Length: 285
Image 1 (tube, helix red, strand yellow):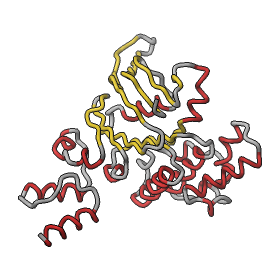
Image 2 (cartoon, rainbow, N blue to C red; image 1 turned 60 degrees about the vertical axis):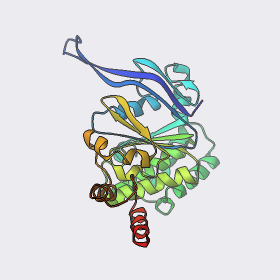
Image 3 (cartoon, helix red, strand yellow; image 1 turned 180 degrees about the horizontal axis):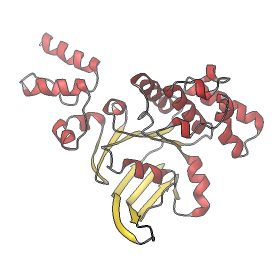
Image 4 (cartoon, rainbow, N blue to C red; image 1 turned 90 degrees about the vertical axis):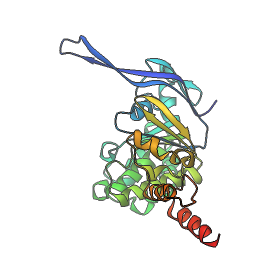
């Protein structure tokens, strides 16, 4: 079994009036079956309201399925005795780093999780050091988090989760509140965790540029997984992505428009370098 597996997972938000009577039900996740392997870099993509953040909250047992099942590290999240083991297996990083940072000094904040888990003091400091180094924030260990940029704060949040030694990190739109520089910093740190530390990464986002390095992409719409494949397979379907109101990386779109004009380029070009290489090949031909 993979590190995160769902079987026909569905979740309903129930709206109630002031007296607690049910006013309506919204199905936010609808019959989703996924199998995510240890060490994978997975991106889950979708427009606002597609259900991707609701799905993410199931991976950390913040929400429980209305129907179906989700297993994290082989544990059924509905079983109360597994709650903390599930949360330790799949750490969660949210949109707003200010909501996750509680310490007055960076290294204290990162050590908070392991301390709560009862990790011995010597090991806590080892974990703090390795986690801050993994996200490129070790030199800021004595700084106040309040003095950091958005991207730096988010990397500290990721280090705080990493210090608890999860097998998997779920990042729920971690760059939504950041400027382009901060976004790049965070994605670079996330990729390094996956490449170097071999942590499973599940990245929830609607920024196309962030998913080009993923092993596999799931695209959600109206609570369902409507597309899945490698980034190249997904970005080969420009018209379908437009129908789902999703952007496409500029370079992918440019190659697509040239293709339509008769230029012999392959589908699903993802990076500027790939684009240049393909143009050079055409010139040589």
